[in-house]
Length: 173
Image (cartoon, rainbow, N blue to C red; front, side):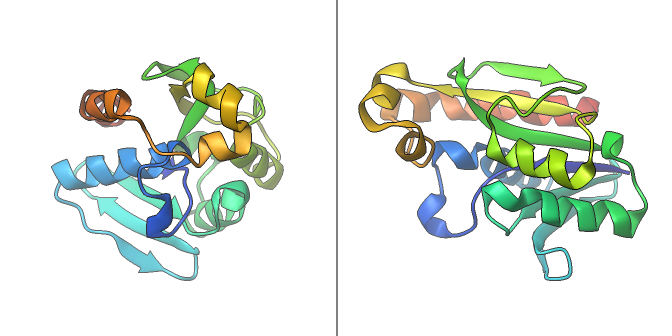
């Protein structure tokens, strides 16, 4: 089984924010594969199961910076290793829409990855980073407000293609 973890913050006020790109990607995947989300309080997560591809989609409800709590409990329950996950998260240091896959690596300043690395005691897990850079906006409002900002019109128009690419990548994993 493969666990696909989309990073984001729970609650509708965070929909379509840069930090919720991981949630958005999993929502898109779930929609095209006709999967339904279920609340799983024991994991503090929303889960959608894709039996055809042997995939479990996970949207932790712990907030972005504490995602490691939820993922650790899921891995323990299913007796899986960190290499059995694929993280899908935003990266404001990458050009908007650029998708970068790594088998392992540091947190690179991403607090969700820091949480996961701390809870898993390893950096050895695959991650798919999706660029959200908009240096002009980021320089005006700062990093915290930037990651919680919504996409502008031009970025929003590019999202369907980006989400299709991410879904295709997940299907190949």
